Every structure is written in C-alpha cells, then in structure tokens.
Image (cartoon, rainbow, N blue to C red; front, side):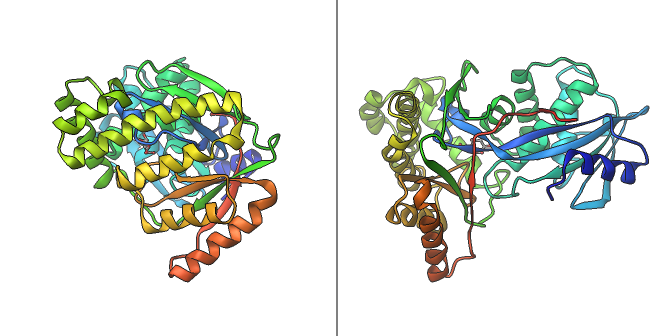
Length: 384
Ligand code: GLA
C-alpha cells in the first residue's frame, strides 16, 4: 500500500492501541551500473528511488517485538529479542527482526518495539524492497535507542541482518543506496574503503527518464545462483593470489585466462570489466552527462548475460526491445535471475519504449511487465 505518514500513524494506533513515537522511511534502489562488484570490494553506482518503505514504531517496556505490515495487519509476528537466532524467523519478518538482532549482536541495545510497516517498493522486482525494510527499521531503532550509529554502521547492521538472519550472502550496495542516497544524485561507492561520493544525476534537466521494467520473474538471493556466483568470484581471487577481484585490472585478464578454468575466467572478466565501467560511468556523468551512458549500459548488460550468466530471457527481451525502440541504453539491474531491467530514455520516447516492451512480452508469451519511471530520491530518515 502507499499510505501517508498520518494514515500510517492512525493505522498503528488502531492496531496497537497507542500512538507511534514516530515514523521513519527508507527508499528502494536502482543500480545504474556495477553489478556483483560490491562483494568483490569493488565499485557501484546506485541511486535511492522515489519508492520507499515506512515504519511506524513505538518502544515497549519489555523485550518483546511485535511486527506487522499494512498488507496483513492481523498477521502480527511476536518475538522475544533475547530469543532471536539466525534461522528462527521465517518470511519477511526476518528483515525487521534481523536488524534488531544485528544491532544487539554489534553491541548496541534496542528496546522492545511495536512496528507497523508499509511499503511502496515492489517486492521481488530487484529494487531492494528488503533493504528498504531493513534501513527503515535500522534508522527507527537507532533513534529510539539513542545509539547514534553512523550511516556506515547502519549499512553494516542491515547487511549482517540479511546475511545471517535471512541467509542471503549479499554485499553492501542496497543498504548503502537506501541510507546514503540524495535527491538528484547517484551514490558512487568504493565497497572496500566504504567511502562514498554523490554524483549529480539530473535526469529531468537532461530531458531523460529512467524506466524500471519489472519482468515479474521473481528471484531470491538466499538460494542458488547468487551464492554460486559469489563462490566463483572468491575462487577466482584465490587462484589469482589477490584478496579480492577488485585487485585485478583489465590488464591482468590475459594472465587470468591462463590460470583459471573457462567458466571462472568469464565470471572474473565480468567483475574486472564492470569495475572499470563504473569508474567510466562516473567520468561520463561528470563530463558529458547521463545521455552519454548508453554504451556502458549495453556492455554491462552483455557482460552479465554472456560472462556472468545472471540474465534471463525476460530481462534480455526487455533490454533488447527497449534499445530497438529508441532507448539510449538499457541493462538488467540488481542481483539478476529475474527482477528488473532499466532503460534510459528521452522523455519523448518513454511511451513508445514502454509500449514496445509490453508488446514484445505479450508476443513471447511472458507475464505482462510492469514499467514505470523512477527518480533519484533522498535516503532513509525520520519523516514524522
Ligand atoms: C543484490 C545484492 C547486492 C548486490 C546486487 C548485485 O541486490 O543485495 O549486494 O550484490 O545484488 O549487484
């Protein structure tokens, strides 16, 4: 659902019988470029989007947590903070409860809480609906416990929750975008040093739109392919004698071809070239502007399709059709195996690209895609 903060506060009061202490919000994200580079200590360039998760929260006198969502307000998950362990919570409640568990695990104490969550980030679309929940709960718990954790520390708390409580071996990109994003900017993040820099991304000013093309093919990073790709990268780094693939450059690929088996080599080549593309994209944005990103988006998508093998027929159809219909560039975004692709289009071409992709999906017999524009928005914080 998409409630206003006031409506969410009213729903909280109705559900829990007392007013919330406040409302916090955290956005989903789109990654402009830099896929699977985060857990290789590399570079990413995501931005926070204008779709977010809100949480109404109120501390409790005991160590219980009650959490429910506006989609299923009667489904309250009740938990004891001291009894939380990895694997003990099933379903979406593992995200909010995981954050509270991770805070305590990192040495900060949080009070028991009543939480009501409302989200406008489509679930399973590759827009990090899970990081949005984690970050909204993280900023709420940080404020209510007066722990004063920095945004970088909150990123680590969100990642710990996702890695341990949810069991998805993901990196820090999604939480970083959700916490560090600013309206009109992308976040250029060095995942090794954790330093970040805001890069202006004025789509409207350039007469552009960024379309999300949600393929409706759902994915889960807690299973299968994502973890397998991560293992290949770690194997590649080990065989090449470096701490992480970040330490290899395009010039090292010739040597890597002789050392690695064919499949591991292609996985490594994706990461090494993708890291270079992120840095090129930052240069392009500060020099020529977003309209010049098309070629980098195309090579990034081809690398994910052919070398990293994380695309699928629906994502390839969305990307190829968007470009044929006039998009400046298109690529899948996020972890892959489904989820969404993005297309950068001139505003005047937006409707034609949208229609063409919808038609191509119908012709291929795929589930109808959901296509909508997003804007770079500001990161997580208290809204009421
Ligand atoms: C998912 C993960 C991120 C990142 C991307 C791929 O979104 O949560 O950490 O690895 O996939 O770039």
